[in-house]
Figure 1 (cartoon, chains in turn purple, orange, green):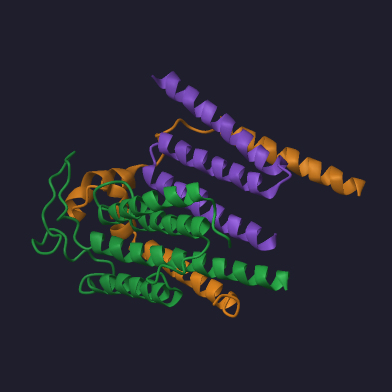
Figure 2 (cartoon, rainbow over the protein chains, first blue to last red; figure 1 turned 90 degrees about the vertical axis):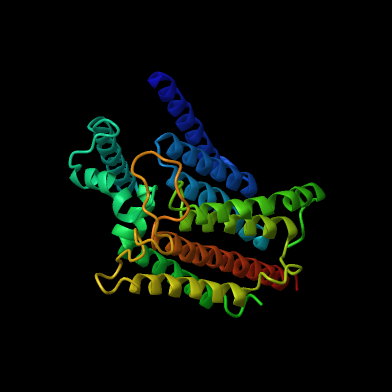
Length: 79
Length: 90
Length: 158
């Protein structure tokens, strides 16, 4: 049981690192913002796995929802 | 230019090694050193405040001043944003 | 901002009311389940963000105005401070209503239980005040930034 949870932790963290790296490496702006949002959503899943559902709800709402909306506004405004 | 890169490299290596050392020195999950306050909250929060959610009882009852400061910070940030965009948005 | 495609608009029409109701659920049940005022307000504001991104503007929704949301935000903070002053007979943040038998004053049973809505004293009221403040504050930020984006696009196209 414990090893199963640890495997989920490791896979989650590796995907999160890959998404964060993609957010830096993408040349276009909109895919970069989407990759940043994916990293934030996986961070909220990690908070949930560490038994902190309060922080997970706040992170999923603010990091993946509102920040991405404001970034999309900025990209649409400068184009 | 080259000395700047060397200084940056040394600082990065130092920072990364400190993070690595602290990651290996970390004690196991869920075993804090000083836990008297946590034990008091877990034992008495449900009787004293009547809330089932101990986190909310700490945030809004025992540590109410922190929540007041957080709400004031949010209010000040929104006032600053409205003042910054006052002529721009309709 | 021009509205997005028809698929996005149709899905938004089905989903945004459910998101708003879930946010209010998190706010009102803050003393029983995980969450609270800040988290529920952020979830509800993300529903506003979804509407703004998919429809382009909220000009058809008459109840979402900047001045009205700003008024709601100020009233939420004022209500929070007034609830804090309510227990001034003992200390500043004293929980006056808990275990008193009146409003939200039932004695909660100790241990693991499904929970009673009518417990918690001043904590659910503070949850609602902070939830109102966070909801309308983040909504004001989104509305102001969307208006500024319209302004810059119009200025660049001239």
